[in-house]
Length: 277
Length: 114
Image 1 (cartoon, rainbow over the protein chains, first blue to last red):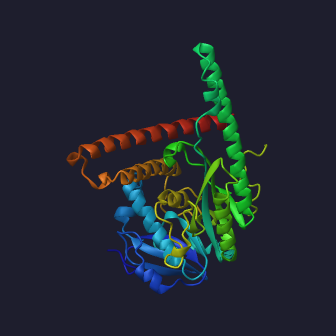
Image 2: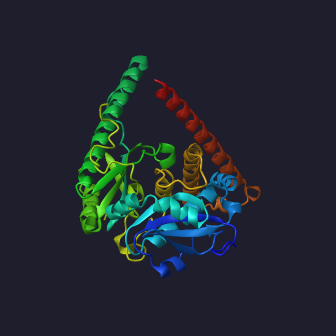
Image 3: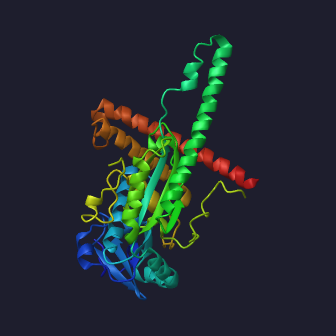
């Protein structure tokens, strides 16, 4: 097994960057990648990296590509990455790095991070005492098609065509209404968040639902506002104001979706795809 | 309460752990996000796209199997006709995902050419 004392520079996996040194107990009790050594802290010019020595045989370019292509291995890698990031997060803000951020040896990892210190520090400030909430809005399943039933008495080809076109009109109408409700949900939640971003809505086959995903949002919420945010979520789902959609939330997350500097800090309009060009 | 996934009672126990069943959410976060710092070992981003779709399909099929009480992913397909059928269905899904990704890539590149 590779250890920090290995003579040849091995492969070093970096999970996250922190300002203050993370809790040693949390690191000691957390398992990173199954094939690697214990999690350890690497000082990098005032910042701390949480890293793990991993065997080149499993984390070289070819081996990694092969493993990433096996769903069960990919799941293991993703969960291991999250464990490493979570272990780093106990004592203050954390900037999670993307899964499988790998370097040839400590020196290379330290160089890469130290050279971006100002940006990482401002990111750490931005994420301090904040967590991320994932909110997905789907169109509600619709009850029986009223207009189609109303016209069911019409028979023959013309009856069929008129029913079909009424159905399409209804569907378009319902979809537009649901989209409007999804936007309203987003607007309401943004009031309790310091930033918001949107992931691409997942396809029906991925969600396993018969209705489309309309909003796949992530919200960055101050710890002090967390109760207000979750209450807003409860209100949205409870009081029937949005009958055309189903809202599901998960959290609190380490703010993965906001740990980037290539993103506009202003959340309001930045991700509206539908905005005119 | 509601059908929300968040469980305030669990916050103390595991402040940053994803609620169970949200592996898709986790993947979205650890894979889809922009590279913050490039490592020495590169991962082909196009492949990441494709394999994210595939893993999500895998998760979806695992969830479906769990709901049906089948642990087929832990079972040798050769030992179980049901598992074998699921393996075929999964392969079918993977191929569909791949086709989708290829079509999307084609659409995007023709879109970019305009």
